Amino acid sequence: MRRFVLALGTVLFLAGPAAAQSPCPASFQGQTAPMTCACAPEAAVSGGVWGTGTYTTDSRICRAAVHAGAIPALGGVIVVTPAPGLPSYAGSAANGVTTSNYGPWSASFTVAAPAAATAACPDTFQNQAGALTCTCTTEAALSGSVWGTGTYTADSRICRAAIHAGAIPATGGVVTVTPAPGQQAYAGSAANGVTTSNYGPWSASFTVAAPGVQAAACPANFEGRNAPLSCSCTPDQAMSGSVWGTGIYTTDSRVCRAAVHAGVIPAAGGLVNVVPAPGQNAYAGSAANGITTSNYGPWGASFTFRR
Image 1: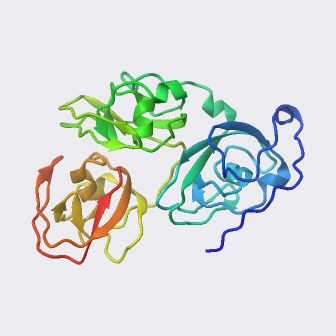
Image 2: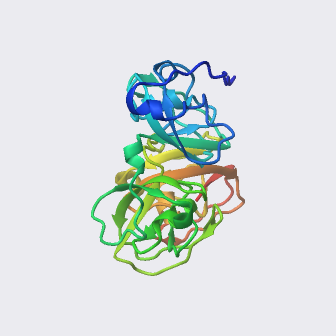
């Protein structure tokens, strides 16, 4: 795919609150910190955008903001937050803007109305009853203990878990935290510069993602695929089908059932990042997270999960 990054033309200041902000740049390339800026009507209705909720850094910021529902087509003030690069970006149609699919890209951004980024995240998710969108400061993102991978104990530090999950960079940003059922065991791991710990049963959990992240439903299996895939598992998908292997699975294994076995999502489902892997001479089955997988001999291709 040919990619075009066009120079930003003259950006007009908007009347009212937008006039107090600097105009947004055309794209987020080369940016490493959150910014608050103003989109003019002209900037909000033109330019290419790749992704849904999380966008490639060469996407037009203001056009992405309309797609995300942060501003109308007339423009307005937005908060743009850096996010990690993704193995794939799913395009979609929303709010009069159609974005495109794309493969791996090194960095991303999310965009929200300023009001969505004002509340600071609590230290932990204990005693929370519903989903929460909040802001992680740099200080909050770099301190505290976390137990689990993908699904975290409710007493884990939210912002530290958000870095580990890839929802925000170490400099902080806006996250959406969602309650999840308590697990019988939490597996620690190292990801994105954060090492989390193992733990046993805990009564409540949470997951964390960049706000507005939407993913296509996962396919039943990974056959015929050779590129990373970000997708969403339903509870039904997560608890049905056959799986062969442990950690690395045959491509005809059920993706979502394997994801539960691998500990990247709970039985209630969730977002997964599926990565192709070479075929193995043998796949060892095992029991983990309520799922029992089977042994198998040679198979030509495999998949695993990026945590």
